[in-house]
Amino acid sequence: MNLAAVDLNLLVAFDALLGEGSVSAAAARIGLSQPAMSKRLAHLRQLFADDLFVRSADGVRPTEKALDLADPIRAALRQIEDALGGLGQFSPDRSQRVFRIATTDHVAATLAPRLMATLRQVAPRTSIVIRSLHRQDVIDQLEKGSVDLAITILPDAPTSIKRVSLFHVDWVSLVSASHPEIVDELTLDLYLKYPHLLVTHVGDLKGYVDRMLDDRGLKRNVVMSLPYALAVPAIIARTDMICTLSANLVNLASWPGVRSFPVPFDYSGYEETMLWHRRNDSDPGHGWMRRTLLEVSETLTRHEP
Image 1 (cartoon, rainbow, N blue to C red):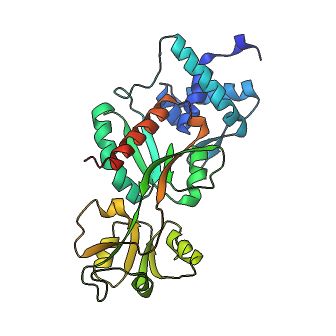
Image 2 (image 1 turned 90 degrees about the vertical axis):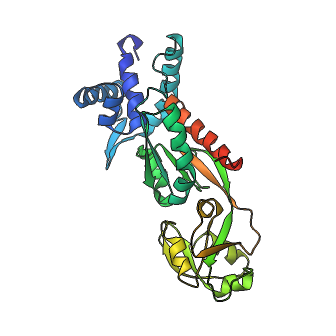
Image 3 (image 1 turned 90 degrees about the horizontal axis):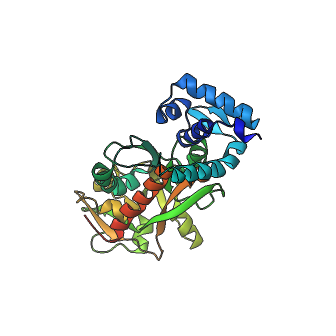
Protein backbone atom coordinates (compact mmCIF):
# COMPACT_ATOMS: atom_id res chain seq x y z
CA MET A 1 0.00 0.00 0.00
CA ASN A 2 1.27 3.45 -0.95
CA LEU A 3 1.17 5.40 2.35
CA ALA A 4 1.30 8.69 0.48
CA ALA A 5 -2.14 7.85 -0.91
CA VAL A 6 -3.65 7.24 2.55
CA ASP A 7 -5.66 10.12 3.96
CA LEU A 8 -5.34 10.20 7.76
CA ASN A 9 -8.94 11.40 7.95
CA LEU A 10 -10.03 8.02 6.60
CA LEU A 11 -8.47 6.31 9.60
CA VAL A 12 -10.21 8.75 11.93
CA ALA A 13 -13.49 7.86 10.21
CA PHE A 14 -12.69 4.15 10.58
CA ASP A 15 -12.11 4.64 14.31
CA ALA A 16 -15.41 6.51 14.70
CA LEU A 17 -17.34 3.82 12.82
CA LEU A 18 -15.87 1.16 15.10
CA GLY A 19 -16.75 3.07 18.21
CA GLU A 20 -20.28 4.11 17.24
CA GLY A 21 -21.55 1.21 15.12
CA SER A 22 -23.56 3.69 13.06
CA VAL A 23 -22.72 5.86 10.06
CA SER A 24 -24.79 8.80 11.32
CA ALA A 25 -23.44 8.58 14.89
CA ALA A 26 -19.86 8.27 13.62
CA ALA A 27 -20.42 11.31 11.41
CA ALA A 28 -21.72 13.34 14.34
CA ARG A 29 -18.79 12.25 16.49
CA ILE A 30 -16.19 13.73 14.12
CA GLY A 31 -18.26 16.64 12.83
CA LEU A 32 -19.23 15.38 9.37
CA SER A 33 -22.50 15.07 7.51
CA GLN A 34 -23.83 11.56 6.96
CA PRO A 35 -23.17 11.73 3.16
CA ALA A 36 -19.57 12.78 3.84
CA MET A 37 -19.10 9.86 6.23
CA SER A 38 -20.63 7.46 3.68
CA LYS A 39 -18.14 8.78 1.12
CA ARG A 40 -15.24 8.13 3.51
CA LEU A 41 -16.54 4.63 4.15
CA ALA A 42 -16.57 4.01 0.39
CA HIS A 43 -12.93 5.17 0.19
CA LEU A 44 -12.01 2.91 3.12
CA ARG A 45 -13.59 -0.07 1.41
CA GLN A 46 -11.61 0.66 -1.73
CA LEU A 47 -8.41 1.16 0.24
CA PHE A 48 -8.65 -2.12 2.15
CA ALA A 49 -10.49 -4.14 -0.53
CA ASP A 50 -13.13 -5.18 2.00
CA ASP A 51 -16.65 -4.11 2.99
CA LEU A 52 -15.29 -3.33 6.51
CA PHE A 53 -18.76 -2.43 7.85
CA VAL A 54 -21.96 -4.17 6.78
CA ARG A 55 -25.51 -3.08 7.46
CA SER A 56 -27.32 -4.54 10.47
CA ALA A 57 -30.71 -3.99 12.07
CA ASP A 58 -29.51 -1.01 14.11
CA GLY A 59 -26.46 0.35 12.31
CA VAL A 60 -23.33 -1.19 10.85
CA ARG A 61 -21.36 -4.22 11.97
CA PRO A 62 -17.57 -4.64 11.50
CA THR A 63 -16.30 -7.46 9.31
CA GLU A 64 -13.47 -9.75 10.41
CA LYS A 65 -11.09 -7.60 8.38
CA ALA A 66 -12.24 -4.49 10.26
CA LEU A 67 -11.74 -6.22 13.60
CA ASP A 68 -8.23 -7.26 12.59
CA LEU A 69 -7.45 -3.67 11.63
CA ALA A 70 -9.00 -2.13 14.74
CA ASP A 71 -6.14 -2.44 17.23
CA PRO A 72 -3.26 -1.40 14.92
CA ILE A 73 -5.19 1.56 13.49
CA ARG A 74 -6.26 2.78 16.91
CA ALA A 75 -2.74 2.33 18.26
CA ALA A 76 -1.39 4.35 15.34
CA LEU A 77 -3.94 7.13 15.90
CA ARG A 78 -3.09 7.27 19.61
CA GLN A 79 0.62 7.59 18.80
CA ILE A 80 -0.09 10.42 16.37
CA GLU A 81 -2.24 12.16 18.99
CA ASP A 82 0.56 11.82 21.56
CA ALA A 83 3.09 13.18 19.09
CA LEU A 84 0.87 16.20 18.43
CA GLY A 85 0.39 16.92 22.10
CA GLY A 86 -2.64 14.78 22.85
CA LEU A 87 -4.99 16.36 20.33
CA GLY A 88 -8.25 14.45 20.16
CA GLN A 89 -7.83 12.58 23.44
CA PHE A 90 -10.95 12.03 25.49
CA SER A 91 -11.82 14.93 27.79
CA PRO A 92 -14.62 13.92 30.18
CA ASP A 93 -15.52 17.50 31.07
CA ARG A 94 -16.13 18.41 27.41
CA SER A 95 -17.32 15.13 25.91
CA GLN A 96 -20.92 14.73 24.70
CA ARG A 97 -20.48 11.02 24.08
CA VAL A 98 -23.33 8.55 24.62
CA PHE A 99 -22.35 5.27 26.31
CA ARG A 100 -24.70 2.30 25.90
CA ILE A 101 -24.59 -0.34 28.62
CA ALA A 102 -26.54 -3.60 28.60
CA THR A 103 -27.33 -5.04 32.01
CA THR A 104 -30.07 -6.19 34.36
CA ASP A 105 -32.30 -3.99 36.45
CA HIS A 106 -30.68 -5.09 39.70
CA VAL A 107 -27.19 -4.17 38.45
CA ALA A 108 -28.53 -0.83 37.22
CA ALA A 109 -30.15 -0.22 40.62
CA THR A 110 -26.86 -1.05 42.32
CA LEU A 111 -24.46 0.92 40.11
CA ALA A 112 -26.41 3.65 38.29
CA PRO A 113 -26.96 6.00 41.28
CA ARG A 114 -23.24 6.09 42.07
CA LEU A 115 -22.23 6.18 38.40
CA MET A 116 -24.48 9.14 37.58
CA ALA A 117 -23.40 11.03 40.69
CA THR A 118 -19.81 10.70 39.46
CA LEU A 119 -20.63 11.65 35.86
CA ARG A 120 -22.60 14.75 36.88
CA GLN A 121 -19.45 16.00 38.61
CA VAL A 122 -16.71 15.09 36.14
CA ALA A 123 -18.48 14.51 32.79
CA PRO A 124 -21.75 16.45 32.87
CA ARG A 125 -22.26 16.39 29.08
CA THR A 126 -21.97 12.62 28.67
CA SER A 127 -25.09 10.46 28.51
CA ILE A 128 -25.81 6.88 29.56
CA VAL A 129 -28.29 4.55 27.88
CA ILE A 130 -29.07 1.40 29.88
CA ARG A 131 -30.42 -1.38 27.70
CA SER A 132 -32.29 -4.44 28.88
CA LEU A 133 -30.04 -7.47 28.92
CA HIS A 134 -30.84 -10.90 27.51
CA ARG A 135 -27.73 -12.97 28.14
CA GLN A 136 -28.18 -14.93 24.93
CA ASP A 137 -27.88 -11.68 22.92
CA VAL A 138 -24.92 -10.12 24.74
CA ILE A 139 -22.19 -11.31 22.37
CA ASP A 140 -24.17 -10.29 19.31
CA GLN A 141 -24.85 -6.81 20.75
CA LEU A 142 -21.19 -6.26 21.62
CA GLU A 143 -19.98 -7.52 18.24
CA LYS A 144 -22.45 -5.33 16.35
CA GLY A 145 -21.49 -2.32 18.44
CA SER A 146 -25.08 -1.68 19.50
CA VAL A 147 -23.81 -1.58 23.09
CA ASP A 148 -20.43 -0.43 24.39
CA LEU A 149 -20.42 -2.56 27.52
CA ALA A 150 -22.36 -5.38 29.11
CA ILE A 151 -22.47 -6.20 32.81
CA THR A 152 -23.48 -9.81 33.46
CA ILE A 153 -22.17 -13.34 34.06
CA LEU A 154 -20.93 -14.81 30.79
CA PRO A 155 -18.19 -17.40 31.41
CA ASP A 156 -18.31 -18.83 27.87
CA ALA A 157 -17.71 -15.57 25.96
CA PRO A 158 -15.36 -15.85 22.94
CA THR A 159 -11.82 -14.47 22.96
CA SER A 160 -12.96 -11.34 21.08
CA ILE A 161 -14.77 -10.29 24.27
CA LYS A 162 -12.66 -8.80 27.07
CA ARG A 163 -13.77 -8.96 30.69
CA VAL A 164 -13.02 -7.74 34.19
CA SER A 165 -14.79 -8.39 37.51
CA LEU A 166 -16.70 -5.45 38.95
CA PHE A 167 -18.15 -6.53 42.29
CA HIS A 168 -19.08 -9.60 44.30
CA VAL A 169 -22.71 -10.60 44.74
CA ASP A 170 -24.21 -12.62 47.56
CA TRP A 171 -27.76 -13.93 47.61
CA VAL A 172 -30.51 -13.61 50.17
CA SER A 173 -33.96 -15.15 50.19
CA LEU A 174 -37.06 -12.97 50.59
CA VAL A 175 -40.24 -14.24 52.23
CA SER A 176 -43.42 -12.57 53.40
CA ALA A 177 -43.33 -10.98 56.84
CA SER A 178 -46.59 -12.85 57.49
CA HIS A 179 -45.38 -16.18 56.11
CA PRO A 180 -47.31 -19.08 57.70
CA GLU A 181 -44.21 -21.07 58.61
CA ILE A 182 -40.96 -19.21 57.88
CA VAL A 183 -40.65 -16.86 60.84
CA ASP A 184 -37.31 -17.03 62.65
CA GLU A 185 -35.25 -19.22 60.33
CA LEU A 186 -35.24 -20.40 56.74
CA THR A 187 -34.11 -24.02 56.76
CA LEU A 188 -33.30 -26.07 53.68
CA ASP A 189 -36.43 -28.17 54.25
CA LEU A 190 -38.60 -25.06 54.28
CA TYR A 191 -36.76 -23.66 51.27
CA LEU A 192 -37.63 -26.76 49.27
CA LYS A 193 -41.16 -27.03 50.65
CA TYR A 194 -42.53 -23.67 49.45
CA PRO A 195 -42.93 -22.35 45.88
CA HIS A 196 -40.36 -19.98 44.36
CA LEU A 197 -40.29 -16.85 42.25
CA LEU A 198 -37.37 -16.71 39.80
CA VAL A 199 -35.89 -13.53 38.31
CA THR A 200 -34.46 -14.46 34.90
CA HIS A 201 -34.12 -13.02 31.41
CA VAL A 202 -34.09 -16.44 29.79
CA GLY A 203 -37.85 -16.84 30.08
CA ASP A 204 -38.10 -20.25 31.73
CA LEU A 205 -38.56 -21.74 35.19
CA LYS A 206 -35.01 -22.86 35.87
CA GLY A 207 -32.07 -20.71 36.90
CA TYR A 208 -28.60 -20.86 38.41
CA VAL A 209 -29.91 -21.79 41.87
CA ASP A 210 -31.78 -24.73 40.37
CA ARG A 211 -28.62 -26.00 38.68
CA MET A 212 -26.79 -25.76 42.02
CA LEU A 213 -29.57 -27.75 43.68
CA ASP A 214 -29.44 -30.31 40.86
CA ASP A 215 -25.77 -30.89 41.69
CA ARG A 216 -26.85 -31.69 45.25
CA GLY A 217 -29.67 -34.00 44.17
CA LEU A 218 -32.28 -31.45 45.31
CA LYS A 219 -35.15 -29.66 43.58
CA ARG A 220 -37.25 -26.60 44.34
CA ASN A 221 -40.64 -25.71 42.89
CA VAL A 222 -40.46 -22.56 40.72
CA VAL A 223 -44.01 -21.41 39.93
CA MET A 224 -43.29 -18.00 38.40
CA SER A 225 -40.47 -16.24 36.56
CA LEU A 226 -40.13 -12.63 35.45
CA PRO A 227 -37.29 -10.63 33.86
CA TYR A 228 -36.99 -7.83 36.42
CA ALA A 229 -36.74 -7.52 40.18
CA LEU A 230 -38.78 -4.43 41.04
CA ALA A 231 -42.06 -6.36 41.33
CA VAL A 232 -40.57 -9.08 43.54
CA PRO A 233 -41.11 -7.61 47.05
CA ALA A 234 -44.81 -6.86 46.45
CA ILE A 235 -45.42 -10.36 45.10
CA ILE A 236 -43.55 -12.00 47.95
CA ALA A 237 -45.33 -9.89 50.58
CA ARG A 238 -48.73 -11.24 49.46
CA THR A 239 -47.87 -14.92 48.98
CA ASP A 240 -46.14 -17.86 50.61
CA MET A 241 -43.47 -17.79 47.89
CA ILE A 242 -39.69 -17.40 48.26
CA CYS A 243 -37.40 -15.39 45.99
CA THR A 244 -33.61 -15.65 46.03
CA LEU A 245 -31.88 -12.59 44.62
CA SER A 246 -28.98 -10.17 45.00
CA ALA A 247 -28.34 -8.89 48.51
CA ASN A 248 -27.20 -5.60 46.95
CA LEU A 249 -30.68 -5.05 45.58
CA VAL A 250 -32.46 -6.08 48.78
CA ASN A 251 -30.27 -3.70 50.78
CA LEU A 252 -31.20 -0.70 48.63
CA ALA A 253 -34.47 -0.11 50.50
CA SER A 254 -36.65 -1.21 53.39
CA TRP A 255 -39.17 -3.27 51.46
CA PRO A 256 -42.54 -3.33 53.25
CA GLY A 257 -44.09 -6.66 54.11
CA VAL A 258 -41.03 -8.85 53.54
CA ARG A 259 -38.09 -10.18 55.50
CA SER A 260 -34.83 -11.65 54.26
CA PHE A 261 -32.86 -14.71 55.31
CA PRO A 262 -29.50 -16.20 54.39
CA VAL A 263 -29.72 -18.80 51.64
CA PRO A 264 -29.88 -22.18 53.44
CA PHE A 265 -27.07 -23.95 51.54
CA ASP A 266 -23.38 -23.37 51.00
CA TYR A 267 -22.32 -21.31 48.00
CA SER A 268 -19.62 -18.77 47.20
CA GLY A 269 -21.70 -16.11 45.45
CA TYR A 270 -20.61 -14.79 42.06
CA GLU A 271 -18.89 -11.87 40.35
CA GLU A 272 -20.73 -9.33 38.22
CA THR A 273 -18.48 -8.91 35.20
CA MET A 274 -17.96 -6.03 32.77
CA LEU A 275 -17.59 -7.16 29.15
CA TRP A 276 -16.57 -5.28 26.01
CA HIS A 277 -15.38 -6.06 22.50
CA ARG A 278 -11.64 -6.04 21.88
CA ARG A 279 -11.98 -3.41 19.13
CA ASN A 280 -12.73 -0.88 21.91
CA ASP A 281 -9.59 -1.67 23.91
CA SER A 282 -7.67 1.39 22.72
CA ASP A 283 -10.62 3.79 22.53
CA PRO A 284 -9.73 6.49 25.12
CA GLY A 285 -13.37 7.33 25.91
CA HIS A 286 -14.28 3.69 26.27
CA GLY A 287 -11.28 3.11 28.52
CA TRP A 288 -12.28 6.08 30.66
CA MET A 289 -15.79 4.68 31.13
CA ARG A 290 -14.42 1.25 32.05
CA ARG A 291 -12.14 2.82 34.66
CA THR A 292 -15.02 4.90 36.01
CA LEU A 293 -17.22 1.81 36.41
CA LEU A 294 -14.38 0.02 38.20
CA GLU A 295 -13.94 2.94 40.58
CA VAL A 296 -17.68 3.14 41.24
CA SER A 297 -17.77 -0.62 41.89
CA GLU A 298 -14.96 -0.29 44.42
CA THR A 299 -17.15 2.02 46.50
CA LEU A 300 -19.62 -0.87 46.88
CA THR A 301 -17.03 -3.02 48.63
CA ARG A 302 -16.08 -0.07 50.87
CA HIS A 303 -19.79 0.52 51.66
CA GLU A 304 -19.55 4.18 50.74
CA PRO A 305 -22.84 6.11 50.40
